[in-house]
Amino acid sequence: MVVDDDDDIAGFVAFNLQVHGFEVVRARHGQEALELMETRRPDLAVVDWMMPHMDGVELTRRLRAEPLTSALPVIMLTAKGMTVDKVVGLTTGVDDYLVKPFDTAELMARVSSTLRRTKEFREVSPLTGLPGNARVTREIVECIKSGKDYSVGYIDIDRFKPVNDVYGFDRGDQFITTLARSVHRAATAAGKPSVFLGHIGGDDFVFICHPDQVLPLTKHMVTDFEASADELYDPEDAQRGYIEVPDRRGGKQRAALVTLSIGVAESKAGGRKFNDHRAVVAVASEMKKVAKSQPGSYVAIDKRHSKAEPTDLPPLA
Image 1 (cartoon, helix red, strand yellow):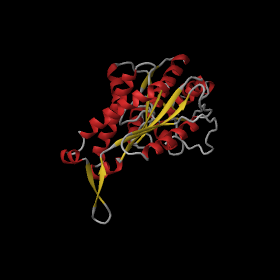
Image 2 (spheres, rainbow, N blue to C red):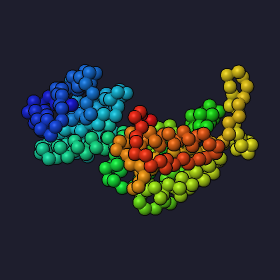
Image 3 (cartoon, helix red, strand yellow):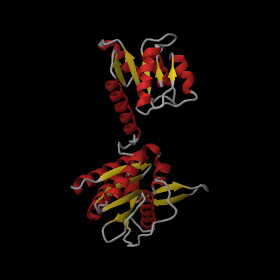
Image 4 (cartoon, rainbow, N blue to C red):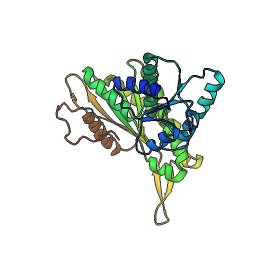
C-alpha cells in the first residue's frame, strides 16, 4: 500500500513497485488507508510523513494499535533528515525511512530488505527463537533437491499435557525452552555438517542432519533434557518420580516425569529416497508414534528400503 497525497510521488513509487512485480493499492491520506485496510491486507505500507487529515506518524501509531495491522511493516517517505524526526517515527513503530529525493534502486532495496526481515521474523518461534514450519519445509525441500544423504527427526515431549495441567502454561513454556536449549547444545556438540533445528509449535521440534549424526545427536539431547527437566518439577514430585493429575471424578492420576519420543526419517544411498517433503514428514511422524509406544525416551529410525511413499501426506504440524 502506498499512502501519499502527492500524485507524482505516489505514482512514481507505485509504478516502480508494479514493474518489479508487486501489486499496489494507493491511498491519499491516513484515514483512507485505514479504511482500505479493512478490506485489503497489504504486506507492507509505504507512507508519506506529511499528509492532510492524518500524517504518517499518526497513521503508523494507529496501525500499531490494531491487532490485525500491528505487525505490518512501514517505510516512511520523508523530506526530514533530522535525527530527532527519525526518532519520533521509530518510537511510533516505523521500520525504515526513505528520504526524498530517492531513486528506484534505493526504493526497491529498502522494500525488499524490509519484506525479507519481516518474513524471517514471522517464521521464527517467539518462544524459542528457532525457525518455524515454513523454514523447516524449505530445508527439507533443499535436502531432497541436493540428492545428499540426510535424516529428519521429529521430537515430542511425552506427558507434556499433565505438566501444563498441574503447573500451568508458564511452567510448561519452561519445559519447551529447556528442550530448545538441550537440542541446541546437542547440535553444537555434533559438529560438522551443521545440524538444522526447527520449532514447529508447542512441544514439537525438528532436526535435520546427516544420518551418521542421528544417534550421538539424539543421545546427547535426551540425556541433557531429562537432567534439565527434572529440575523444573517441584522437589517432591521430582523425588517420587511422578506428578498427580486431577481427573474429572475428583480423583488423581499418576503421570510419570517427561521423556522424549523421537521419530526419524532417513534418506541415503542404497536405502529409501523421497521425492516429496510431505512424505518425509509423514514417515518421521509415523516413527514418532512408534517411539511413543515404547517406555521412556526412545528414538525410532525408519530403516525401510522401500521407495514407496505414503499416499496420505499431511502438512507439517
